[in-house]
Image (cartoon, rainbow over all chains, first blue to last red; front, side):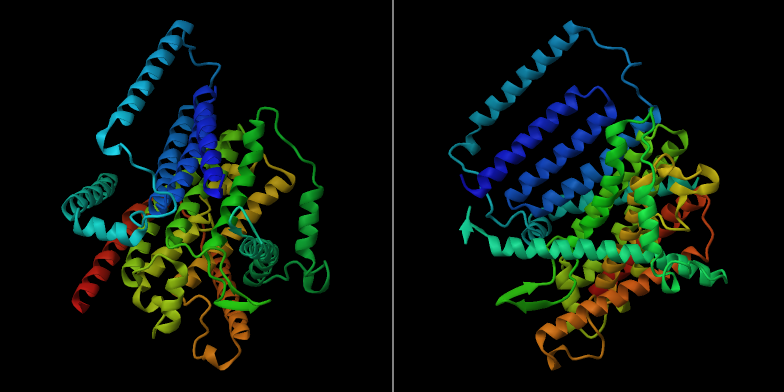
Length: 166
Length: 347
C-alpha cells in the first residue's frame, strides 16, 4: 500500500463515519458540525485528485459560509432534541428502505455509464484542477455560461444591498 | 532515507518550521498583550503595568500563570464537549493561517535549501480566506455551548459580522489578484521585491477595505460587538474561566499577528527591505534581514490596530452592518471595476 492509498482509505473512512454521525446525532448542532467534517474529508479527496482549487472553494463555500448559516438558523430556532416529536419506528424503517434503494439505483447507474467504462481515476496527476488551466478553460471554452452566472451572482448581491437600503 | 516513498528530511524540516512559527506566534502574542496594555496606558496618560520585573516586562508571564492557576469551571447546563471544543477551534483556526505566509526568502543549512515558508501552495490567498471563514466557528460553538442567552446573542452577532465582512474582504482581494495575476503569497511578495513599487501603490483603496475588514474579522474595537461588555456582559466567553478563556483571548491576538503578516505580505512587500540590495550580503544573512523586516512590519501593523482600538469607540450594531453592506461592498466593487479599467487601458 502506498501513501496515496493510505490517505485515500483514511479519508474515505473519515468521510463515511462523519456522514453516519450526521444522521444518528440527536442534536441538530452536532449534525451540522459532523457535516462540516464531511466537507473537510471531501476536500481532502479533491486534493488527492490534484484539484486544489475545488478543494479550497468547497471549504470556503460549503464549510465556511453555508454551514455557518445552517448553524445560525438552528441556534435561532433553538431546536432541542427532547422537545421535538420523535418519528415512529415504521416511518424510520420505510425511510431507511427507500434511501437504501435510491443508493443502490445510483450506484448501478454510475456503474453502467458508458463514458466511465474502463476509465481510471487520475490521482496526484492531471492539471485541470489547478487554477491556471481551470481559468483558461473557464475563459476560453465556457466563457458565456461563466459570464452569465457571474452577472447573476453580482446582481443577487447588489439586489440584497438595495433591499437592505429600503 | 525513504519509507513509504516520502522525503523524511523534508517532513522533519517542515515540522521544525511549524514548531518555530507556532511557538514564535505564541510568544509574540504573549508580549502583544503587554504591548496593548502599555499602549493603552500611554494613550490614557497613565503608567500601565510596571510592577512585575523591570518596566513590568514580566507582566504577561504573571497573567499567563494566573490564567492557568484559576479554577476550571464547566457550567452544569453547558454542552460539555462543544464547550471544550470552542476555544480549541478558535486557537487552531487562528494558528493555521501561518502555513502559507512567506517569512523570508530561503536559507541554506546543513546542505539543505530551506524555503522560509511552510507551504507554498498556488492557492495561498484562498487558503487564508478559507481559514478566516473557519475562524467564526470557535466563537459560535463556544457561545452556543455555554447555554447562556448573552453568549448566544454574541455568537450570532459574531457570525453575521464575519459573513458580512468576508464579502467585502473577498472583493478587495479580487482587485489585488487582478494586478498580481497569482494567488501564491510567495509569488506576490517576490513580484514586489523585484518590481518597482509595493502593491499598496496600485491598490490603496483595496488596502483600506482589506484593513477595515481584517479588523472586523479579528473582532477588534471598533468592531468588537461580539464581546461588547456593556450590552452582553462579556459575550461569547462569559462562561469561560481559566486557560479556556485564555485561549479565546490569545486567539484574538494571534489573529491580529496573522492578519498583520498577511497585509504586510500582500500590500507592503512582505520581507522586502526597501533601498537595500539583498545581493550585497551573504544569502543567509539577507534572508535573516528579510525575516526581521517582516517582523518590524507586523509590529507596526499591530501598533496601528492598538492605536485604533484605544481611539475610536465601538460601533452600534446597525452602524456596523450599514458600514459593511452599504459602504464597503459598493466601494470594493468600484475598486474592482477601476482596477479592471486600468488593466484594460494598459493592454
